[in-house]
Length: 396
Image (cartoon, rainbow, N blue to C red; front, side, top):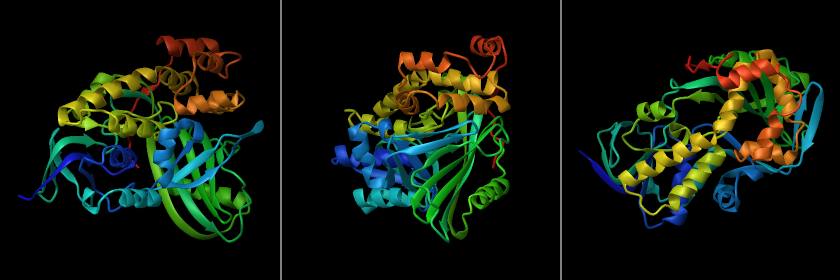
């Protein structure tokens, strides 16, 4: 049997695992690392975006090597109004993510093209029979089980194009909900990476997880045609189905999600319950772990369990909003809820996305004339009325 040794083994080279490795390389260079990734490239095939206000200066500095674009502002469009918001917005791609990690880590710290057959808090058995012996193991290989949660789904297909002529967009469109409303709440998302390079994503807040990729690709083509944009080349494509969590049993999720090792990223439930947003939580956890003193297997497990539990408790307000969106509101009412939200104070919107809403923010979001009837909303909140369904992944 082949054997490898390291201080920390990170299972999964996606966003959460990669940021942990980057933070460790910067703040704990005395430790030897090993990232084990089943794919051939770290980060898979993704575009990740975040607002400037999602991250403090330390987090912003950690993310900087992976940025491919930063815009000083963005737009949103709804049937009854549009808005220009002056909050800086940045994007990362898997290509840059992979390159940044390979530049920051020694070659022997990255092992791609290998799966994991089994693991414990100090050992990992790879699919080729290699045994990795580590001081501690942390598992970041994605969400394993959603059966303990209720809520809905955010699902999407994104495509990056080189166009035959400039598209004319000066800034991102974070939500364009003027498109036909299908399968719940639907919006288009646009990132202008270059004058003739455009990323378009067709996104849905839906009650089920079924994703018809071909149909969404067709709708993206229709959006291109409606704006007069002609495609020269399709550069790449991504798709995803993410949970929007309205409630559930966190202890059951943690128990059944694998107690063998420490966990991070979506495997630990570290994402925004309503937006499914993951960058702010991934970078916060990575820095928190890098600054933690004890990093042996048992200490890593304890640290990640406490962090995840604290995150679950801090997300209670956003889970309530998810419950209103998928329980209190009917699918055709979701557009009005989001349209109303985007009339609010820009700083309130910033704090919402970062998961740092103040007490007044929480009051303001619920106050006033609501887009759904008050009795129905109260029934959902109290548990006596219409509730979101248990989550069940149907596949892609």
